[in-house]
Image (cartoon, rainbow, N blue to C red; front, side, top):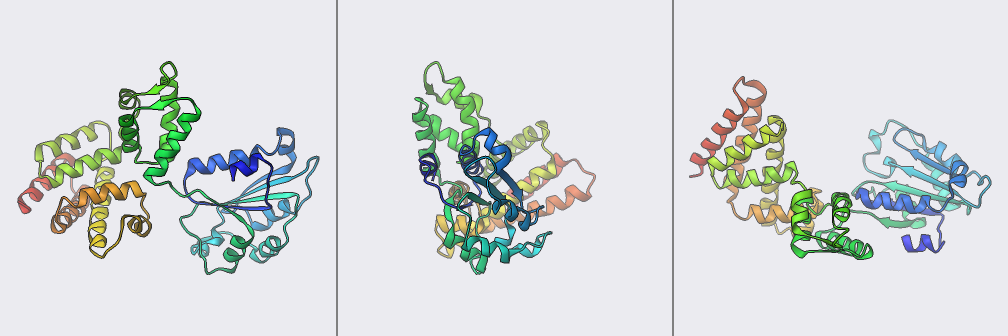
Length: 336
């Protein structure tokens, strides 16, 4: 699509579907580059359909360009294309939209950004839109796709990256392309002299996020390594992380491990797990590797223990670190 835009091979309607924010921003930039700053002043409209009626955006899309060859209109958050449309605060004129789709003005480029995992394929409006629009897929990339994207990007910048450095970058960003590209901004500046991104640079500049620290904590809990678990928990508290927030992430991680364990027994593949659980494929990959180390009953006990810990954190006057210590000690004894 980007290549076609640069060659001025333009369509009247585009549907940009997916949740990868970095790719969405890239698409927006390329469309806006079609207009000069002067043209954009008069011929660019950007409408959030969560707060603006569809009719308002359609009026703009149907208007003739003013002092220019084309008009560019963005429609964002079209919830009427999803199964959650009943939750929308604004009633949209879908019939007028259907009329537009069947006969769009040739001087307008309409770009619809649907930041959703899926659309409601049963709806007439969804079927009609997919029939007339050029689809642009901006779903989150797999680990391999993200790896290839980064390699291609660095090649274009005439930079290289050490294999271990790339592996560490993927691990610390959980193969999230948006996070990876944000970190590459720092790494490419750091590597300008040698034209090479090293493992040391990634270790120094790319910090491990909270979820990854909690992932390590999960391993300590399941290994019944009380001393290591308490040390990790204490370090996170010293970093000003709220105990309730820490516990919520732990509960979420153990819930994911249980879901993966159960669904794998039902024959679900890694790709199917990512779709069903709506979790990034890289996180599913990590969860599969972690879950297979432990029996389901132990994961269940840890999950229930953390749910009980959450209740105590909300109702007890005891220190959070003491409550966590009691939890990990009890869990270690119960599964010993």
